[in-house]
Length: 281
View (cartoon, rainbow, N blue to C red):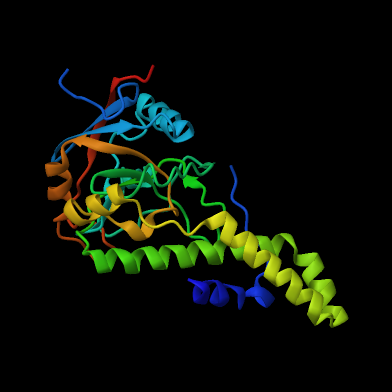
């Protein structure tokens, strides 16, 4: 693990670059007080539970459902053994072959990453977003979301995936800290004060270790990823705000659809309507 910290710290000199900013019934939920929404699609019904501990995403999703925002949108990005994505308003009347995925309600949502309580297991409901370079705060799209299908992982594969995730978390944290200290770094570099620059570097390394932590992957998460599958490399990077509690057979059918080079199904798969069937308390 020390090798990872050392590798992260080599980014020190270039880590002070500026970050871009982003604007702003028989159904039994896992958590009894959570809201439940039914998505009626051209391939069947999918029922999702919205977690109460991600309230910004829950309330936004319920608002959009209540407004009919999702009625008619396509599943515009489908990747077998990975996920199915929808929620782009531009997809409602999109001609065949049109590139989709950039539409939204003109706002983003503050990240609510509650890991390891919520993670990218099979059936997880998560918010799509733009990449880290443009969106270091990991803010979510105002409307686009995906449902995880993923694949099953061996113990060794989980170890590798966890190591990659930790490395990325360390890099992100260290770069953020270096950016916050950019003025001091620049002053020390210009003064040629290598001793104090190294002292600051070591302090930021220690702070990075404390913030990120080095805990092993929890046994419950390991069990899910090895038995039902998922996409563990996305953990900590995207907000998981719910899960499918009925209709994964429909999601399975959607993920098997034939797609074009942009991962859009060649035959339109659409959310016909969305409705709230149980409001949170």
